[in-house]
Amino acid sequence: MTENFEQAWVLLGVGMIAVFAVLMLVVLIGNSLIIISNRFFQESLGLHNAGESLQESISPSKVAAIVAGIKRVTGGRGEVLDIKRKDK
Image 1: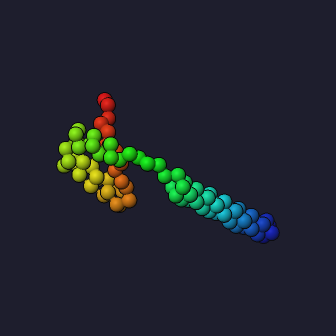
Image 2 (image 1 turned 120 degrees about the vertical axis):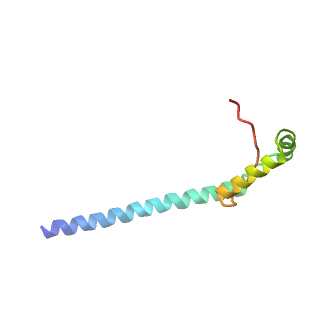
Image 3 (image 1 turned 60 degrees about the horizontal axis):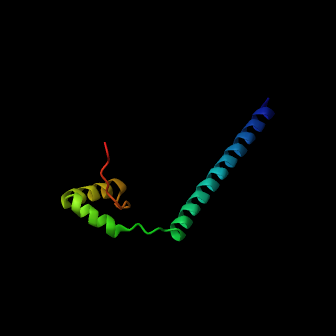
């Protein structure tokens, strides 16, 4: 009976190590893919045109409030690229 328990513990340990290794590979490959795509495939967003339309349709205090909210929620890592009015 103890041999069965020993074999079960060994299988449990090997299985957990295998799952951990596979998940680490998934995370590392995913992060590498994100870094590579951000480095080599940046797109120009045309912020000048968006900024001009923002000034015409939204007051500067509302834009400042939106930007401050995004910075607070994302911890300073987020950036407002465009503001569009949602159609109802």
